[in-house]
Image 1 (cartoon, rainbow, N blue to C red):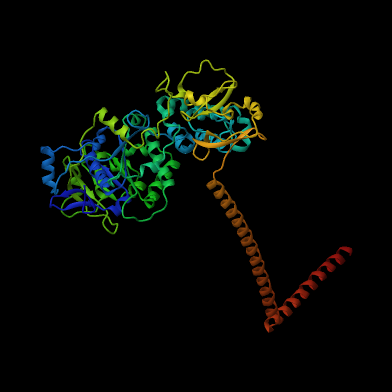
Image 2 (image 1 turned 60 degrees about the vertical axis):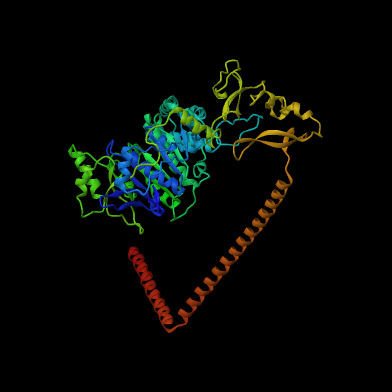
Amino acid sequence: MFYDQKIWVGTDGDGNPAYLLPHMANRHGLIAGATGTGKTVSLKVIAEGFSDMGVPVFLSDIKGDLSGMVREGAMNANIEKRVQMTGMPGFEPKKYPACFWDVYGEQGIPVRTTVMEMGPMLLSRMLGLNETQSGVLNIVFRVANDGKLPQKLDMYGQVVNAPQLQNIADLKQAIAYVGSHADEYTVEYGNVSRASIGAIQRAVALLEDQGGDKFFGTPSLNIADWIKTDENGQGLIHILACDKLFLNPLMYSTFLLWLLTELYELLPERGDCDKPVMVFFFDEAHLLFNDCPKQLMDKIEQVVRLIRSKGVGVYFITQNPTDVPMTVLGQLGNRVQHALRAFTPLDQKAVKVAAQTFRTNPKFDTEEAITLLKTGEALVSFLDENGAPGIVQRATILPPQSYMGAITVEERNEVINQSEFKGVYQPMTEQNNMEQVPVAQQPMMQQPQQGFMVLDPTTGQYVQQPMMQQPMMMQQPMMQQQPMMQQPMMQQPMMQAAPAQAAVQTMLVMDPTTGQYVQRQMQFNPATGQYMPVMTEEEKKAAALAAKEAEKAAKEAAKAEKEALAEARRQRADELREERAERARVNDSVLGRIKNTAISSATRTATNKLVNGLLNSIMGKKK
């Protein structure tokens, strides 16, 4: 609950509130406790406080009960009792602005990224590869980055100037290509064995069966869209449906780590700020660290340590604090510890470790209190105004203001349809008899085997296109209006017969900076047989200004470089003159002359001894 410019989380036995301070919220946090002790309630209370503060929130929803935040809470006997125990000034049921997301696109707006954006390190973890196989996968990415994979064409028969590894199909083709040309790349990139290629292909096929083909592709998620507030100034709550994603722990943990990495690379350095830019809550956080290679663990630690300065807070939700590595646990300044059960010696050790992480409160034994906490109670410790850990409090957690429980499918669909992101991240589909089926998945049995790859704008996927057949277009009426530029390259000689005075036409062309198709004014150039974009007056002025600025910058840089070289030569000349003057002063001094005389005498003596020795040796041999 956001109260008095702070997040009110709970109240201790003496009626003292436990507050989470906004300017300390980006110091990360931990919500831990055994199953059924109230972790989800604590999570919702803190998330609602952030939203009321105007901070966007990301939640991974594994059980589906976090979806209830879009519905108003209901007053009942338990809520009334909790309100009285905590001393809340007034309980107001309310709903929160939320958006549902789903990697599989079933319970929310699709979340996608490209294979190239994921990178070889995270993808290796997702595929469960060993060190050798990860190295081979890295070679595949290097070959793709160096532009040595076969080129692809867009709808107009032009080479696509974009990363080639976008989806699973691209990755499989790249792996097969590198494997079949291994001898060509061994000297430049390293050894590529058939065994490693085969292992990677099997892992990719397994990932594809688990839904990886839906996760990798375009349009790619722009995380900047998540850092938004609604019209009332409340932070949007982004809820990721993880009930199906959670069944693949490697994919779940790698996806969450990719989100953090992307956000870290996107946001500028901010330092300390009044409130976070965004807050992430990762449920079942132990999956991030299970069987994690050292290289990836170092990456996790680096992101957790440094993303604080970007204004992002990360809160891990897990059953036991020992599930989080100590190097990461030490970065979590805000703690909510629910009950732990000490039935085994290992559990007892975990309770002791958890108790030692809190600042001692003389009113109770922390280690004993952890095992005696009731459902809805927790030991809380938040950073104070100066960033120091506060004394641990045994507090009763406030009730959430939103609905406790899952919503219906109809309610979820209504929220999705009203979302501003509806249609932004969903690929377009054909509007004919194959409605709801992506073009890339439609049967292509009647197409000949020989052809070339083209980019289908309806799906953002590359498909096989026959050489002598018109490319697929988004809608049938549009095909009648397309210029000859859009025909395959085999038919381009016909375009050169177009009249020189061809009129300016509006065409659908691909913008290489965004990878999206946009409308541009194009005019046919008979000299090249190509359509060229018609620049607007603003673009011409901008281009001229940019050229002038570039020329000016080049001249200034050349002048600065010339002056720097001249200054370096002057400094070197001064140093040489100073050295010669110093040697002259030393040689002209009394000590210098004595030293030179002594050196000359010693040299003559040593020379005489050497010559006499040689003469005596020679004369002795003659005798």
